Image: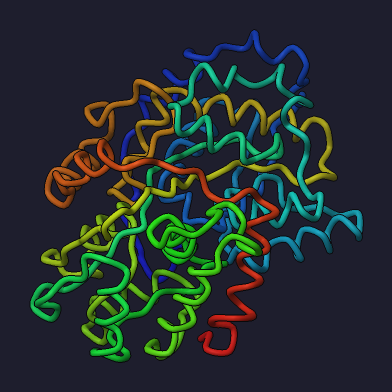
Amino acid sequence: MRTLITRRTFVGGAAGAAGVAAFGGASFAQAKLPTSPVTLNIIDVAGNLALTQKAIENYRKAKPNVVSRIAFTKATAPELAGKIKAQQDAGRVDIDLVLTGTDALSAGIEQKLWVDLIPGHAGSLPKLDDIYLPAAAKMQALAKGQGVVVTYYPSGPLLEYMPDKVKTVPTTAEELLAYTKANPGRFLYARPANSGPGRTFIMGLPYILGDSNPQDPAKGWDKTWAYLKELGQNIEYYPSGTGAVMKELGEGSRDMTVSTTGWDINPRVLGVVPKEAKVAALKGFHWVADAHYMCIPKGLPEEKVAVLLDLMNFLLTKEQQAYTYDEGYFYPGPAVKGVTLDMAPSESQAAIKEFGRPEYEKWIAENPIEVPLQPEQMVVAFRMWDEQVGGAKRK
């Protein structure tokens, strides 16, 4: 979840009507929209509203006959599944749409919380394989039909550091470990179960270290778990979210952390981290892609589900996808083909021009892009990390 960082909201709205026109109404024969407007309650456990809130509000403006009001709330990923399960058990589900990363998506799949969207409602959605970028389509497969990708980025793992403090930048995993031993307490990362960079780091290490099966944390990560335990001896504690990590990096109480393209760019745009911070990639690294998903909890009235499917279509139009460039938070951001930076709001274009990094395009072209763990394996990895690595040092 994105915490401790605030942002500006983009101004504009012409794309709203254009987005509605782009997808029309023909694909909604199977989903009956309500005869009077409804209120939607949307909860975000991934920081996704930074990318999509403007587009969601465009939908409300474009369809006042369908939606009267949208309430937005935020929570942490680990607490979400229990909250939804309690509502479902009580027969009173008041969360309509969940915006989540792979963490809460996985927990919800494990506990059978989500509406089956594909194939259950495939007729009311676009043909996703036709519109998605190839890597976004791979991320969609991870959802097992229980969610729909709305944003995508190659993610990391990267190292982010302050060049005035770190004179010799680690280039290998061994050099990173040596750095932490020589500089105890100056490196940290957040708990993977609630941090995109944290989980990208632990999922990327098996590729860097040459583990036997990067997709099997229980049986194929022997080198990774040993490395993380040794690394942990030099880490003071593990913050609960990435925002706290970036705040410490920005304030100077830490000199280095793990990062992603978006978590590098956006905190510098917002002034949380100094502009002069630098990034590095470890030798042999593979990108571990990330995505945000739209999930619908079971237990909603049919007409609400119809509205949410309509909203999903709207958010997957090119016009609305252009907003997901944001200020680099999930760089690049769009999951749909053909969405270029020049289509984004001027604020997005200016931020990425000033704070983006030319090396990203080179690294994306030259290094493999892997999918994260399957949902059930991700749950295992989070549990093992909590039990074996950092559970006792969380803060």
